[in-house]
Image (cartoon, rainbow, N blue to C red; front, side, top):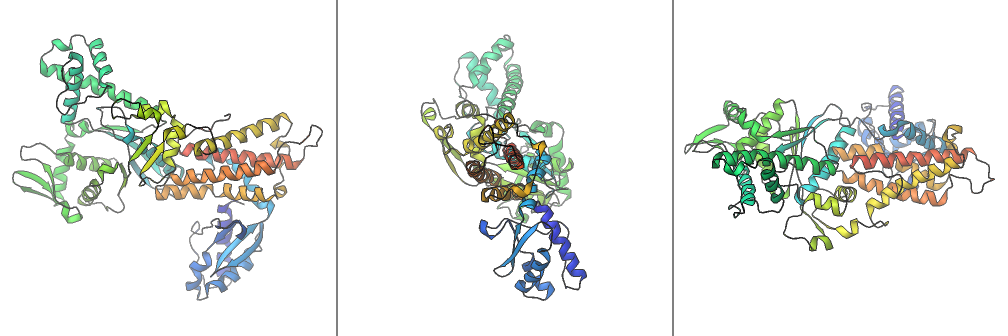
Length: 549
């Protein structure tokens, strides 16, 4: 019996109790929730439904709980129901009902853990959005890991998600980028405010190789050609590095298209029609203070040039026009001041800033280690981290902490293959399940030859099954709260329960002449169910599930 099936059974008995004359306001189907008790000895599952319905029923919560417990105890598969505290129902399933979950998971495969908690939500999820003037650096790494994981979680919970990378390719920085490439090509000094990083050198070499005539062009044309080529090459590099980090975007949207397409001017006109634009000192302003911003914002400067804020407004309206009621922005710690102004844009556009826009701010990270100490310069690029530590350890380590927590990670520790390294601990559990299945198969143990869930009676089996059953709830909660770290911490707990079960229970025969029984076969189902959940959870974090380690 899965948690969802148990919740449905509770909903059915509530409906039956109401039909029998009990004054209950039966909640909608799917609204009944069951959760794992904090203390394992309190049962497999717990629900506070009696506490929720007691007032409407005109009964003390514990009295209602006693009434519901008597009914719930008659449900097939329920071994015991205890009333605890003010009216909690602690439910223990019989071994067969609990063990049936193993088959449900194996047959569900990659679908197990998916849910419909966010069905009907249409979301635009924007993250990373690195300027195309340099490779993704350590500041982008956290959002690359968390943003991609959040997109996977939202989809697993039924949301229609479009992930988006906003390319800041408009403005003076692109001209300085081109000038920096040319300076490297000619041996001149990098212009003030330019890009002195060593990554510019191969761009300059490529420019001279592919356009040997570039230095003979008039200055304005030379800059234009370099800007176009440099932008294309850097964007290609950014895409490749993010792909190496297991991050793919559905949409790459250049800021320049908003300007070239007249969407910035259109946005100003639309906001003026809404009554929130005013003119002052020759400039055009948006009255964002009406919606909680600390000051009004300039859209068009007195010289007629649009501000970055005008592009932000146009971008928000563009997302709205493309059919995204919900827009999630994932920004770095240095963008905290953007929260109020982005919500003000939403309000000025006629949206609800509490429903139609969500701005997540991530704190800074520091990754230390011997290799970082030997680096030249201050830049730490994502490609460096991938080469040094690896995609899986970096992604997992960033995913296992809340985004608003500053992080200091030890790169050397992340590279260790030991149980003290969380990613190794979880991946090793998955590899161990694969090894168990491989060796069991060599011994002739086959799932297809038998399954008797009532045989899963060992205490470690009950604990493992309880953890497996909790996976869909963890996924739904992580998606709703925008907290991928809940999946990582769950996987570590699941791995721990599997390792304990592995130490206590045999899947394979102990000796060559030992008879293979349904207990061996049923335990193989449980082993493979664990493998599936570990793989599904790691996939949600964008981390691989190796079969051998």
